[in-house]
Image (cartoon, rainbow, N blue to C red; front, side):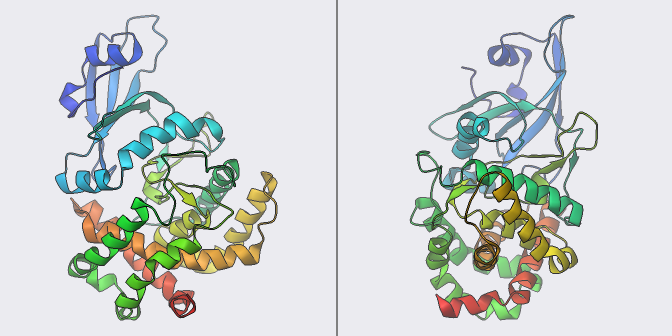
Length: 355
């Protein structure tokens, strides 16, 4: 098994040979852009093969983040373990599309690498500008396939934590509590007073929200289903949508992914006008994939809980991570702003009185 690079300079022709069993005559590395893969370090590898070698002329390498703050968050939440394990164990069990992985490895210190299909010719979603209706529809169709593949069929995956009563759940609650101050310091202008005034009530109820989102039917949750992780096809040989960054998967209610998408990534006007139709599309989508008994009213109730819980994720991201650059600040601020508006639009704070 190939050794794990600690930085991109260790990606050499000899290392490629260890991964693929064939050594290129040369390679060049093209680091990926600002704000992409904030929890990891990524680059496109352009490869020069001898004539007749049937391997791609470019691949993507993904290794642990160089940013110490974001790397520490990744290790605390076992993000690298989860992503390597997803591609190894779960990707073969679903038709929901993700890039092909050619080689991977992970050590006990959670250093890792993924050598992946280069899908940079797809169009990456933009969380700053926000998801259009057409993009939301493609994402909903993806989620219907992903969730139906694991509907009430995920308990056998030991490395995958539950939404509640797990180390991941406790870390999320703690991260929200300690991160709220940094959230206000950096992104305070985007935090509604209505939410900030309920800070203590909200934090006290995180575990209850987690438990509500961890009741059967359980499925595989992507966990970071936002636009910057979406790759939209626009060529004849492309899939309609590929999704990347499976660093935060969980066992729980699939509505968490849909609410996370709609309240963090969708344009606010798109969410306001189309969220009920998109929710209906999801319900019909999982039914078409063979899921029985999940109706719209249940989905709507779950959705409101998940929109409210998505605030925990927003606080953990914006309150414990380093935005690193202007692009990182831009998408984090949009995430906080949209989630706050959605919580108020849907009267989600009323749920704190009910639980």
